[in-house]
Length: 144
Image 1 (cartoon, helix red, strand yellow):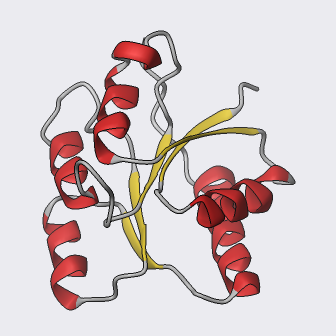
Image 2: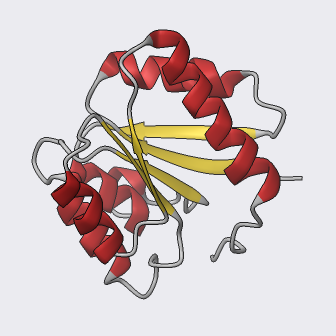
Image 3: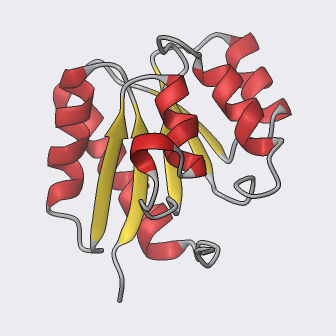
């Protein structure tokens, strides 16, 4: 089986490293790609510029508070684009604000998870994402 391609859109190096660590020993083969701002996320998803030829992700983990283009805008652009709107998007953000949660679901996010601040809890959350999204859910077939 081919590895599941995951795009992590996160500007915190610590959170990127924690996510890499949590997914590093996953039961399901995966390849984690990370970008640190919203503009790079869209280039990656559309295979533009330095991301030409990269595999299209099977799953996107998206922070809301990003430089250059915030996660709210990235989510809207993903879900408005016929080429990539099929990709499941999971918001993984420190924000628990009701308007952020509601806004994300109004724009067809697949799940909204508030990031825990505790290291062990963060790892547990990422591993539970792996258990559900990589082991139980059938993701759409990759295009191209």
